[in-house]
Amino acid sequence: MVATGRLTHPVMPANAGIHVLRAAIIAAVLVIWEGLAVSGWLYRDVVPRLDVIAVALWDLLSTREFYGHLGVTAREIGIGLIIGGVSGLVAGLLLGANRLLARAYEAYLYYLGPTPKIIFFPVMIMWFGVGAGSKIAMAALSCFFPIALSTAAGMRGIDKVLIRVGRSFRLNAWQMTTKIYLPAMRAPIVNGVRLGLGVALIGALLAETRLSKEGVGFLVNQAYSVFDMPRMYAVLIVLFVLAIGINTLIAKLGGLGRS
Amino acid sequence: MTIAAAILRDRLLPLALGLGTLVAAIAAVEGLIRAGFINGYIVPLPTQVAASFGKVITEENILDRFVSTFTEAFIAGVMIMVTGVALGLLLYRVALLRRATETWVAALAAAPTVLAYPLFLVIFGRNAWTIIMMGFVAGLPPVILKTIEGLAGTRRVLIDVGRSLKLSSTQLFVKILLPASLPTIFVGIRLGLIFTLINVVGVEFLINFGGLGQLINDLFERYELPETYAAICFVILVSVLFFVITERIERWLRPGD
Image (tube, rainbow over all chains, first blue to last red; front, side, top):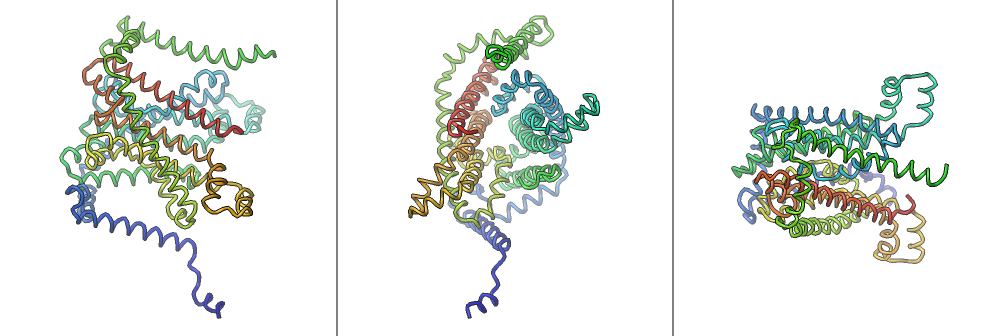
């Protein structure tokens, strides 16, 4: 009887349980949010109603102005990532290939890496001006450290057999780099780029919120300055979705899977 | 090779090369500014920066500012430890909840939460709580993730020993799970504290409130360039010191690594 009961009431698959729980959590958060919005317990507009945020999100995404600002930020981060990424890659290759250089300089990178980069913004303004240059510099400075350190560590982790195979074929330095080192270091380099992109994004956007007349960071600050909270939530939602999405995409493209 | 030669090759030579390069770079900047190749109104002389350290320490109340930043980071640090370990334990104990939300916590770790500082300004006002809460939000995800990892990585035999001694779930946690997972949890706490410190100083700078971050902003707005550079150097020193101390504690907790 018990067995029959089990058969007629199939056990819910584990994945279905996870999806149900996720949906329940999201629903609970939305209900609590809406409840707070209509309760009047918090300052008016600090927690706007969900439909108001949805309208603000739609308005934001349906204006050309937003894409112009998004383009500015994407360009700053892209150029910064190229400058900081290439310099980081070269520095990482040099440190990974030479033990003396690694022992002499890697500690500086290791300890400077976790310092708050935004404090360099005044210096960047003086060096590169108040325009896009200082934001690009912030992005480049931010992403240099994780990419250099990840590349150096990755290079030291290359299987020695691969290096010996390359040398036995009498590959020159360029061929060794393109045929052996870089392919063997795909995972650490992709990981470094992932981390680098994350901090480059933060560096450029924070700089935009501090001093800029364009870019998504400027939009956040503009919404704050006129107390347009629904718009601020809308910009932040788009920003977070883009950041997490790009991060996941790079991980998948690099074959890192879920990490 | 003798031990002395090995020490010379592995320690002293790299140290001399690293420090020598740093000194040479500073000397080169000094020379280029004096020769007019670098604009002295944009980059101050390194000697001026060195000389302004005294002024920054005495006239800008750097000790008070350091205490202010330290207090904010400390409160946020205690909050991430208590909340992060508790949430990590909850997710470890409730497997379904863990499987449903672990990727969300990882996504939160990748999200640029510091950009929400204007939102926190609206909610908490322009005061220390905005800074503390920003530090808390930024530092929380690694503590949760590493707590789960540490607890899940506890050797089965240790848990079985605890169960064979009929320990209660609280005793099992305090006597077995926590000591076994402490090194991994501390890795998360260390990462969390670093993110917290970065965000605390960063938000201080951005909202022009608090300790060391505000000092840099103040000095820059007064266009006191040597002092601005000196304050930046001071923040770097504090960050490096903080990083080294937490790293030493981590090594002490993981002697086998």
